[in-house]
Image 1 (cartoon, rainbow, N blue to C red):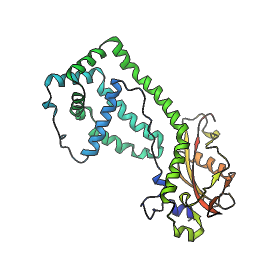
Image 2: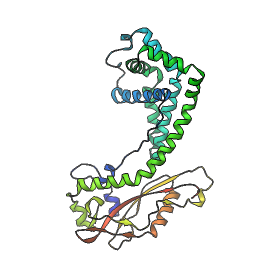
Image 3: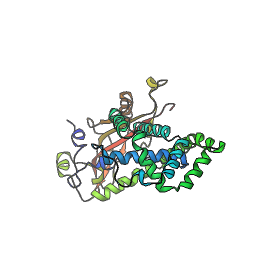
Image 4: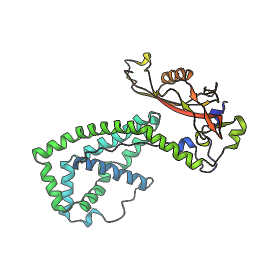
Length: 312
């Protein structure tokens, strides 16, 4: 078994986690536009998340003051507000969107879709969380303010704003995701420096004794690819299909000459085997500036992610 395969999930002796896993982050762009209707949707999802965190395995009612502690007219105002803002419909749409966004960002999590949906159906039904949502709105808005909001959403302008808000959110989300995509290299560089600083004094003697191969956080100057392309040509065999964007994460050892050491390349994850094959072909021609430690060139385990976009 190649060293790369044996060592990629090596538990760090100090932190108990692998360096690769410590750098795993999920970026979740937040829409800029936040109208009352969208506040309802995000409020619903937030309440649901709290319910899941605090109630899994228990069907006991929420703690704290109940809706019955609030004036009946105030509660009715909150209920009318939920109706005019299509709260139940928005909850269903938002819950499904949360799952789909996570699947788009991490296609390998598709096997978790069924249990995630089951949990959401159990704990995130509109009827189950409606009392908590009413408590949130009656605690935030006075009865008079809720009545004014209801009146506004019953006007032509209010209905238009309610109906067009999804389009505004979709446009702003797309723009935000583009900005986050542009910022990702800088973010990953900051993460790399943070990991290096945290573990710079730690060495993995077993790895060094076996074949003198180092992790990125162990070297003074990491291996750097001379080919900066991370988006590769889309495979011709997938053109015209509904496969969509592809992503492949690979790991391998870069030797002291800057070449990829034979037999160390491993596909960590891929959205399609054809993408993985195309990535391996690309790696065959790649060269690196080798890693350095204490003024000498050393071998380093490298992990890279490549994208495949239709039309490229």
